Every structure is written in structure tokens, then in C-alpha cells.
Image (cartoon, rainbow, N blue to C red; front, side, top):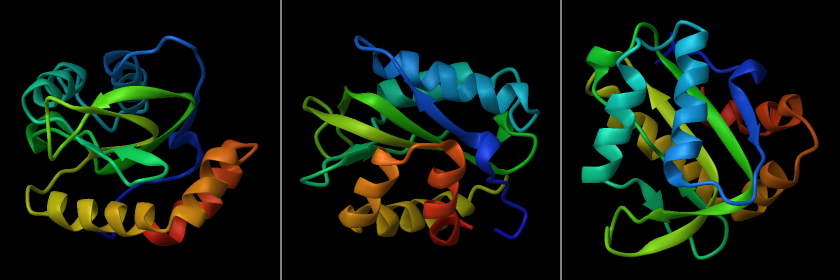
Length: 154
């Protein structure tokens, strides 16, 4: 995954009290589209996939969601990090009828189908370090967030 893009411009601090999963996914997907990483089909593909296969993981602390979609919707591989000011109820990957409060979202825009598993494993390894994730969600700037996650994800 040497060609994967991640920099502070792909880190979003998402503010708002009553946001939904869709609000967060739309904001993040729009940024990936705006920067040219994703095609104009990306947002809808993310939203539709999330309805069928939810992506939240209950980590027993700070929870994460990992939305992604088919590689056909991506121009260039990137990962977008969303840190939510207020946690959002998100349907769980392991129990789609149940939600957990998500504070960190890692949206994957990948160009190789087999790369999803590798990146999901990296994200899971990252979020298992709850001490580090706490620093990420409390970080003051996009640059600080990027510095904290960079070595774990790229």
C-alpha cells in the first residue's frame, strides 16, 4: 500500500450535536471526492454499503467505524480520518441491529480489492491501542491527529 495517501488535509474534525452516520459519511466522502481521490459515485456507494454491511466496532472504550466501498468508485488510494466532536450512534459490524457510540471514523478509498483486508487490520490494530486513540480524539489540530496515526496506517 505504498501508494496510499494520508496527510493532514485528509483529517477532518467533524463538529455538530445531532449528526447521523449518514451526515458523517457524506462529509468525509465529499472531501475524498473534492480532493480527487474518489469518483462522484463514491458517496452513494459508501452510504449504500453501510446500510447493508455496517462498519462500527465496539472497542469497549473509544469506538471506531471503518466505512469503505468497492474499488470501482476510487481514483487514487487514500484514507480519510474523521474525529467526531460528539459521538454518533453507528450500527455495529458484528451486530447490525445494535449501535455503539463512534468517535473516530477511518474512511477507506482503496484501488485494490485485496487491500481492504490489509487496511482494516491496520485500523483495528490502531484502535486496539485505546491510549493512543484517546490522544487522537483529544488532539487540538488536524496535524496533531495525523502525526499520531501516520505510522500506524501508512
